[in-house]
Image (cartoon, rainbow, N blue to C red; front, side, top):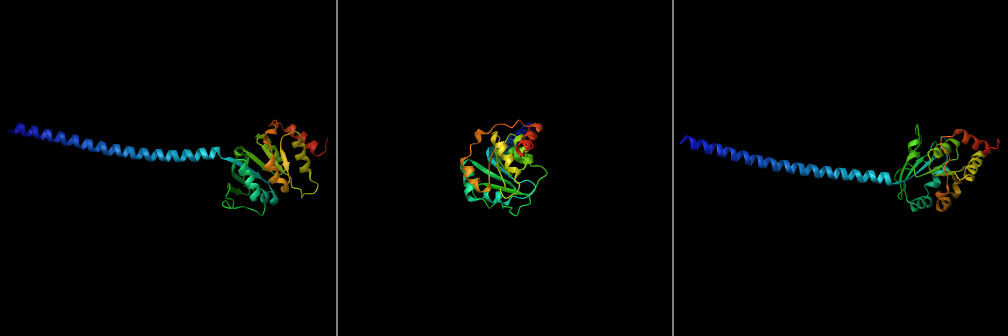
Length: 219
């Protein structure tokens, strides 16, 4: 009698163990499915964010170490913003220096906007830009042209003895950049053709020094 009883006990134990394993496997499968689904959603969301960041056309505006409020005011005007948007630009980054205008990120509804005064280096901003709008400082022009980025120089026409204008004219004459003044910025954004620009031979400081000499009338 004991053997059948033992057999039934062993069979019952084995059956329970099998049932417990099946239930555990189901729970594990549900956990894997749920976790996998959540991970898929997480990856998909961050992939979309990454792709958006990579494909978003960017404009970087720099005024250098001083201030150029006329440029910041003009480039954030509804008319200029509309022209940038019409050309497919979606993100606007402003380096405003010591200026009195520091736009809030929510002050522009047509484009994603960020603004800062200074950084140790703006090289990354230039590298990520599809268009650089800059004051006519030689350093900013050199850094942008050296990075092989389309450059629109806005000359401060309020400066006396404006050598910046001569520099912009000389570089424009050789098809390395476009230039305008704050008052003509919107019209320039509307009509500019970046395809006409030619590379500046980056890394050749001596070549750039010759440009400066020619622009300033040294030679």
